[in-house]
Image (cartoon, rainbow, N blue to C red; front, side):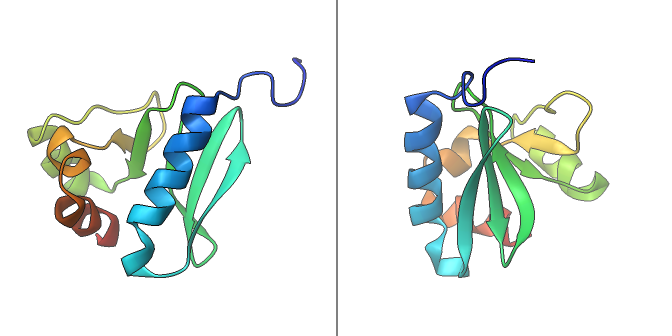
Length: 101
């Protein structure tokens, strides 16, 4: 086991802050430091994560995963989280649309 927080990066911290701010229109979005990165929560339910390097992912069911992959998204390991597509990173409107799903 490593030292707690040793994987965390300032990029991950900054990105978590930015995403929480950009997702405020959906209400009650928070982040929590976890596993060297951050978990993103809506009303206490985890719906996204930011890895220690600052890459962001949203939780997706099969249907949403397929749609996200068509937008250039890729799966985060074996977990049901997919990278936020570039189109959503460049448009807060698209980001909100994905996050609400």
